[in-house]
Amino acid sequence: MDIEEYLRHDGLSLAAQLRQGTTEPRALMQCAIELARQRAEPLNALCYPDYDAALERAAACKPTGVFGGLPFLLKDSGLACDRLPSSIGLALYKDTHFSGNATLVDRFDAAGLVPFARSTVPALCMAPTTEATVNGGPTRNPWAPDRSAGGSSGGAAVAVATGVVPLAHGSDGGGSIRIPASCCGVFGLKPSRGLVPLGPARGEAWGGMAGDGVLSRSVRDTAAALDAIAGMEPGAPYAAPTAPGGGYLAALAQPFERPLRIGVWQQAWDGIEVDPACTAALAHAETLCRQLGHATAPMPAPALDYAAFVRAHIGILCTHIALGVDARLAGLQRGLRDDDLEPAILDGYRRARQIGATDYAGMIQTLHAIGRSMAAAMSGYDLVLSPTLTRPPVALGEMSMAGDFVPFRQKVARYTTFLAVINASGQPAASLPLYTDAQGLPIGVQLIGALGRDDLVLRLAAELERAAPWASRFPPIKRQAPR
View 1 (cartoon, rainbow, N blue to C red):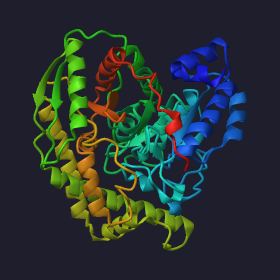
View 2 (view 1 turned 60 degrees about the vertical axis):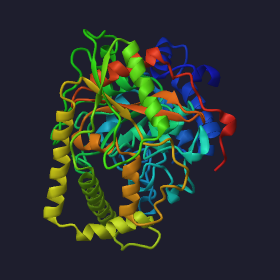
View 3 (view 1 turned 90 degrees about the vertical axis):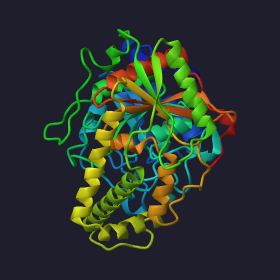
View 4 (view 1 turned 135 degrees about the vertical axis):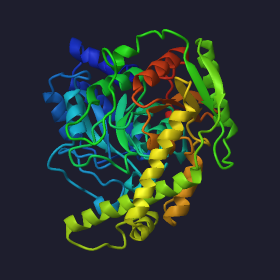
């Protein structure tokens, strides 16, 4: 198989060729590695590449699982894999090795996905742009290299957008799958809380806000991946209902029995402005839904204290910075060094010492209240459309971690306004690449479902994909800048 043919297929189509014997895993891995060198590396989207070993593993791979030997990327999020080290975007964690796999990695393996590198992230995955100093420079947007690729799954989105892989691992604790999906023009689903396992090393992340999934070029690849990785892990503190009937992929073929009732949520809280390009993207998505026969209606912003939520989110992130840093230092048996943490992360680490147990308990209660508010706001609607971001992809350096943590995260909260609340509520939500602005930049639209209705989100996403296909759109490679 040559690269041009490789780029014409999504993951399931390539897997079908593997099953039919018309290609082999090593040939696909060679295509992915060549594309990684040509397209992802110049944009600084990869770290810890293991190309030679990946070729050997692919050559020995017997096609199994739904993807049967497909090249894949694991996010540099600290997800344990005994084949690939991790830094989680920080010097303190650089070259962390693992003796075993996370449950999710075992499920990726069983699905026939063959990882050959990590995708880049910001420091501790706590930024909406991927500019970690440990990576030697920013991860650049393939559509406009002076702009952010998004974060924290920025490297994954770049790799999928440029065709290096048809799907890649991502995680989302405040928009980290949906942000880069919007910035890079790919599909990204944050699954319902508890649907994808986090163990065995942990039961929750960031107070239940964070979870894992994938970014992809086609909705059906995400659906097939979710079939492979979803399902309660024994002993886990959370569980979400899995797809009814034959699974998520099978659900995509089911016609809707009636027109859907879709709320259109456009107004943010606290006077936060939404860029006209993001408003236009939302209007375009609403028009498509109406053309498909669904009913749409304006929905007011859910009744909640957004400033209080932002304070709680910041506090929870600070406590998890301290938890992780202290554990790492204990494992290294040393104290903190000047170059271990980026300035904002260091500030968050210090602020955590001022947060008491009752403060943290109150923050968790604030998160839980968000779920009640979202459920009330969605009453009477099957799904909700909103902007993904309040602005097009930001310029590199605009959301730097060079200052203090609180003002940094407050700036983030005005950019990702429609996203982190969905992490607090635990609902499924996806960013759909349905629109491009006048500058040629992708602008995502968020589709939100009720808890456990990932199947409904995927079904409408697939219907919109058929109405306005996006998989054949690739960024202009000639515009890519060197690192």
